[in-house]
Length: 251
Image (spheres, helix red, strand yellow):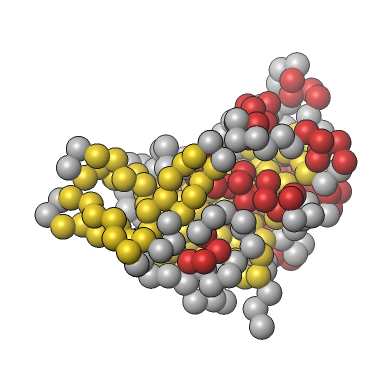
């Protein structure tokens, strides 16, 4: 029997046959505005509701902003931080600024992957994390694409080794059909792609699981929406394209 981690994201566990296999490192890839950060923080919040501690690594946004963004969905993580079951690793500010001085886990040089890993390990051990989200991993190799696969493998060794089931958010440009960095798709255990495409003057959100080691998964493109309670995936529907128009039909 495969041990699984339920994401709690409506519709997602259904398309991966009951949840993400434990210790998997999943690349969550997509362009701007596709909902990657929401997906990642929703995964962590749902874990806290299930009694599973978590760590969020902020590489693209100030930790204060991360908390504000989560609160917009009713996900207030501050009590969990106080209880010592949730932590945000600040890999954004470099410790600069008044708010940054109040952060417990700070990466002084966000471009130093070794330092990031050290701080991340400490945070995981301190809170007993079972779930980790890094947003976004692309920041670590944006200017050095040749090291992308190595960085992901390095993170994977640490994250799997410490027993976490993790999501690495990966940025891609609007037109790019890849997963954000050469070779990263081979290093990750799973790849989930979020898309926001225009068909006939209308934007359509969709999700597809390209691979997920250790489990069967849906091979179809499913529509999803972002609500005031987070992401909802319509696992019983599929997006089909006919003549440049998107049709949403029963799966």
